[in-house]
View (cartoon, rainbow, N blue to C red):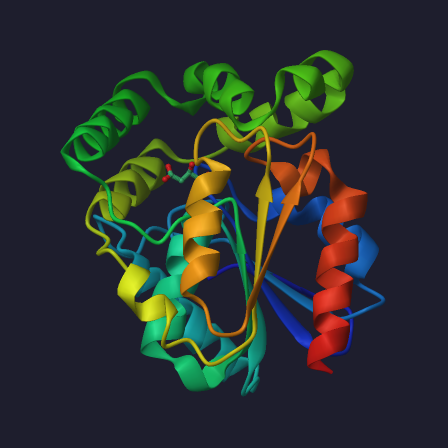
Length: 254
Ligand code: MLT
């Protein structure tokens, strides 16, 4: 699995979303490399990591991350998952709780897909394979950002489009089908012993902030922060506020 390993200090494993790769964490790596050790993988089939299983399950991604931590001789990391990366982070926490020093769940949810969402996953996979990612990238990128960001920051929209356009259709299809297979992990939230930070953008139209509120209610040691003016990709839209929350959380864990 391809990964970046940048900085020193407490290990922070940054797990990207769909259909993205490590590039979505640029604003965090730039700002946090002096605060912590950023481990930034490309999940299998995305970025430059080869496809490992099809469908690509969240549990398979979690196993690959555990294998990466083993290779890097990291006993415990702060695991930060964005959206699909949050599904992976929840699977990782369920399977390897002793490896989690803290958990950050960003723009994500614990529930499984309903029947309608599963059908949509199949359509996304078919479209990726039939049309290719360059054609799908503009529409998918627009959904990740707020109207205001799209209007005021065309360079950010172009950056996100570029990340999506470089994904392999087969990897995107495998991840889409894999997300449809994930179980509901809501019941497991109450059993998480590590401190949890939940981050959401108030203008997220893909995963409503109410999903974050519902998760926060289940946690014994959790905090929810809803950032204003951010949509789904809130870490790129509101990097200063997002990074400040990460730094505060890391300081509490040290
Ligand atoms: C993501 O950003 O990773 C996706 O929106 C997650 C999903 O499609 O459920």
